[in-house]
Length: 472
Image (tube, rainbow, N blue to C red; front, side):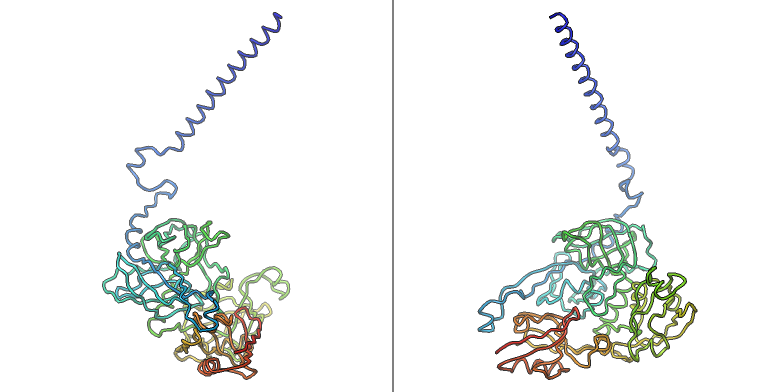
């Protein structure tokens, strides 16, 4: 009994002592940790920037750029509103959907830059700036770069300062300015984490993808907003995020301002981008391609497609040639190639340095427009209110790429017969009731007046052939 009491007493004392020592040590750890993470008052009063920014101060860039970023709201017809009333009585579908995004004031007289996908199919567009709401007019769009230009009736607006995206360095601090989740005038900071990104998100036959990648927080509603440097200068238009959730997960993408300047200038002057075509397409070279083509290194980008009688073929270039330089610009990827051409116009003459059979050569190519000439292009849309869509011709360069001799493209689908038939934007109608079509006016006349069986053949936006059959 005596030994039992001694054992119990010793255990209690040891347990109490161990608990006391553990608690004291743990309390000391918490206290030390709190001291490390706390920001000293003297540091805050002497320097308002965060230590994680390496001393960078974003207040000046924010104050310069935020007045030049606007809030954009849109109203569009709900294309899924295919109810029985629409089918039988050709109702106009009163079910409307609203959207929002951002825009950047390009000039003091009211030109606004935004993304094409922000205003696409919108029947009403409003721009909100400094608590004033303006009705906006679409001056032009460029789906290949996902850019659009709007115009509002206003003067003396604070146009944004234009920077230079070619001089932007990876690791440089940048700010994303926009209206995410309807939160107007929001500024987030990050760095340029990559340049020349091609992420295959632009839904166009000839996409221009050479994005600036940033880890500045970009969320839904930031589309069309500004990416600015620490001087408050525009270096890109925020366009996309890479996310499985639909919200920011660390990767945002912006169209470089050097591309934006050329596209916006064309749209304002001509109403449409004067895009330059060289008559070929390229892809990156990896070890597998190098082995297949018997190359001695991985430099350049190789020609995967050559347009028949195009500018490149006329200059002597061939499929599988390795493009090394366009003028003085070194080419190592498709994004390098597409970005450089995005700065050019039809009629421009460029030197192409290329390699064939591991031997370096050069030639000169005169760039053409989408019809194979150097003339100014003007796109004309044929609008049909009865069908609820617009129609356009197919440029020669696209016909050659798709192997077509004729066709009419459906664009700007609204509520109406076209949407009810399930024909989507971008669909190319090649024939109606087995008769080839090549004129937008002809297509609208046929579809507005036809009765009985109708067979529509064409090519979908993904390149696959499709046949639709209806009875009226």
